[in-house]
Length: 412
Image (cartoon, rainbow, N blue to C red; front, top):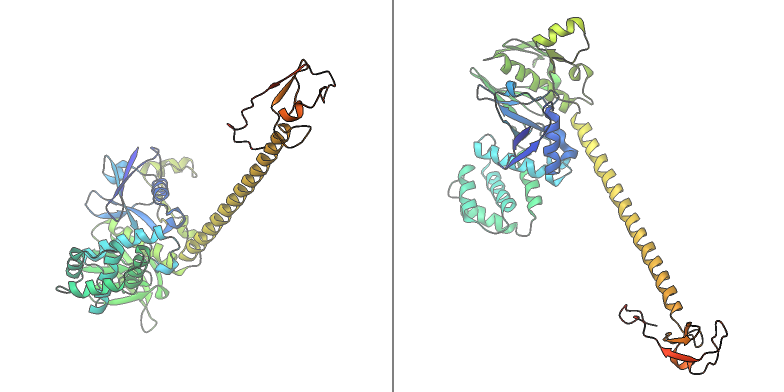
């Protein structure tokens, strides 16, 4: 079957996978095409549910058409776990993150508060998109970032960045955005609540502003539409945050997002209790009565296998191993070429020696003796011989012989 995946820059990729493929299979094929397989753990796939909401696809479970409510499988490639740009090792990965940042800036979710930061960010974006001045870029990004009538200032800042590579400009755009408090947050809006779950903890925007760091969280759970979070308050007393969500899927999505991000950013390794947790549908539940180990109807709850530290270390080792392998291949290639050149030179030397006169050892052989038919000498030496130097038979006549040495480029 075919899956259509929309990149952050709105370019659509078409990948073919097996009917029983898991979400991980789809993501791996997309990342192979884009060259971000080494740092694939930062990304995920989103889809539009039947209720027209964006949900993360659990990559550990099979992709099912019925669960997505679509005839054709359509996904959106998104950055799921944001990290500072200096921890991203590949330019291709930063390029995808850069385009998603542009989309979030256009939507108004990420906006710097300082005017100077806005102007600098706009100039960096223009440099990343084009090395040449484009007035439409200046005016449009000035409007997007809320600095109308600042096109000339952005143009001046852009001119100062002349010579900067696009990849470097993308890095500094990510560096500027990484300083914002909203960077990397997943926003949930539920019945008067506005909650952001990001790299440092849970941030409540509505009904009142409040921040709960991951270090203060004790436990969390969900029961149907009810989401519960126990944490230590400012006075080190345990407090409870309860949110009644619109649906069971919203509550489970909130529970899943908090657990996955807590493990990714705050833990040294993903806990076994997280990776092993699963649920079963009705068919799977009935089948498990007779066979407890059956995979029928089994769906994993959480979609995380490595932490931020593990992803960074794994990518660093993989890139180093790739460099070592490439160096070894290059060394073997140069060695084989050198040995090939050496063997070719030896063969040429043998041919030249065989075509050299056996008497003077200087000129090329160009004469045949009759009746023995031996070819051993040049014409000058043949005129001085009565007997063949090889068989010692008497030479009746000596004829000129024309060998294709010049056509072959052989100089003797």
